[in-house]
Length: 102
Image (cartoon, rainbow, N blue to C red; front, side, top):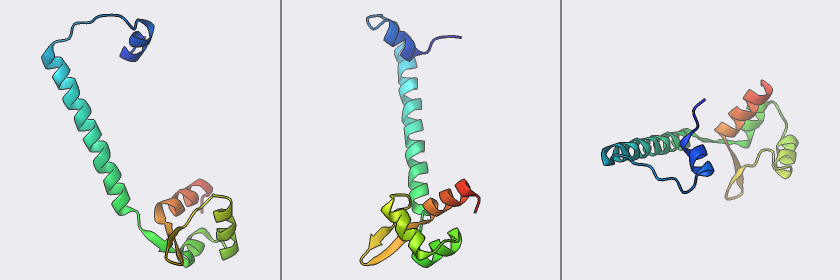
């Protein structure tokens, strides 16, 4: 197995290497593209995540309001407060449903 650049850097911190400038620029471009793609995916996921009411969360999870209250106290499922109303991220509900097969 070939060592990674990180492993080489940790093992030999004072090593000198020669890299063509064009190769270095290409590596930076690839990293920049990957970062941009990751950010775009995160933004798309945030835009897709809607807030649902307490009643919808109870229905989807098949639990009572007291269970939602207890989960909030246990930091298991935290609502988003909008004024006095509680809303839940649909993505959080989906994760719980997937985890417990509901």
